[in-house]
Image (tube, rainbow, N blue to C red; front, top):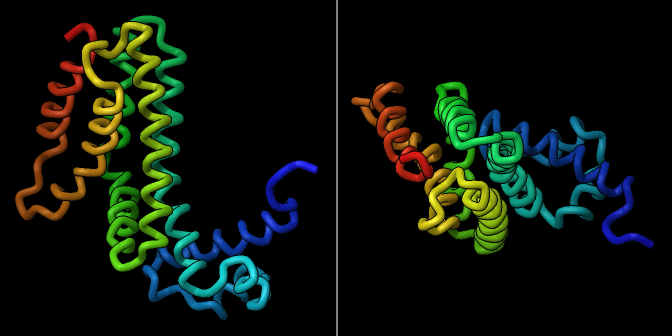
Length: 205
């Protein structure tokens, strides 16, 4: 027999998590009510507790999913760029497009979701462990794509691949600080600084 839970069990968990992620997105942890989860998911309260232990366990699982979903999309996008680019100029152009997309105002909610999940780990060692593990895995994957880009002559090979990966992950998330600033940096000014730094990471710099 193969490993992992049966398809029916996965389906039950997914239905519940879909509802809870939606509640967290709409109103934070105070919006998570077990009765509402039952009504929206069609899963009994007993089954919810069976799969997640308690309300906190349910929230932990949903927060982990929220934290991972956007980062995984960005990693997949970087992987696609590395695979499809035929030279460093094409790679640079594609990376610039990805940078503009991830830094856009359309991604504000995504950045704040990740900030909110990080804040929710305070006083929750179980969630902190889960987030630490998933962030490590995501950076591992990002590092592997950067290393592949180095091997293909896109990124500078004298720089540590993990440090490059961490920088690319961090500068987009860091835009949340500007969004809190009464004198928020303009989009063009931010892009100019980011792209000046990124050019130093590329072999053509």
